[in-house]
Amino acid sequence: MRNAFEIGNGRIEAGTIGRAALPVGAEADGRPKEIPLLICHGEKDGPRLWINGATHGDEPEGAFSIFRLFDQLDPSEVCGTVIGVPAMNVPAFEAGKRGDPLDSFTYDMNRMYPGAADGYPTERAAWAHWLGMKDTCDLQIAVHSGGEHSYLAHMIFAADNPQSLELAAAMGEPWDLVFRSGVGGANPASKMAELGKAGVTVELGGNCRTLTSDFHEIANDLAAGYLNVMRHYGMAPGDATYAPEWRMGHQEALLAPSSGMWVGDKDMAFETAMPAGAPLGNVYDLYGTVTAEVVAPKEGVVFGLRSRPSVLEGEWCCFFGIIDEVRDDLIP
Ligand SMILES: [Zn+2]
Image (cartoon, rainbow, N blue to C red):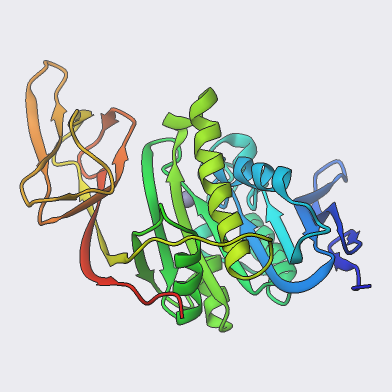
């Protein structure tokens, strides 16, 4: 029988699903501050997959998709271990904000990961997560979305090593937009890649799609991707499926040219190739005059759009992707 998986305050026997928590410190009244973990410790050996949700507290897709994945896991059939982190930044999640509103110095956990043991509050939480993950992780998926102001379509930022590109491809058919990101940067995917492991950041959803069936659809879509990853690496029974090829490139943030009300073009299609000059949306002033038209700057693809109509000049309104190459060899 395989050894139990021990982490934080938890001990999960092989062939079971259990919970644990990573200690972060204490509240003013002495209650422990913790990062909750859901763990499926398979009966047989295999890779260790971490799925990290809510690094940004206004992005609940990670949490719900982890719940949906765990509903489908039979630990007696799983090879390896899945560690689900519904919310890395718990105070930010509670507030429904990108960062912990009480921490103004290190607000964005995804810009200073892995933090520091003696740092600001969010740095300490990041450090607690890093201590838990760094030696127990082979495959890392961080789950993000457009949060309170935007919608993001299927898109993966993969750390630039072959392990991470393979993990990106293992997410399956809907995930053919894979852009390279750095190794060694201040976010979980990048830090795992620095250790020679696989790290990706997947983007899907936004608060504009958290209502009833829409939220289930997003969560099920993500969970299907995680299950495909598990199949690819032999962690779960069944055959993985893949996109026939992957569009790789770089992003260009399109910023609002004027302040007012942002309205996306009614015919704009996400994830679809479009020519330079294609209409993306307009900004109206509060007299109803169109003060700016936003168009595709080059041939490319839209993978994210502002969903909150009020906009200030310089705030971003579109995530635009330029495709630099098409690859069919990300799976070795
Ligand atoms: Zn995010």
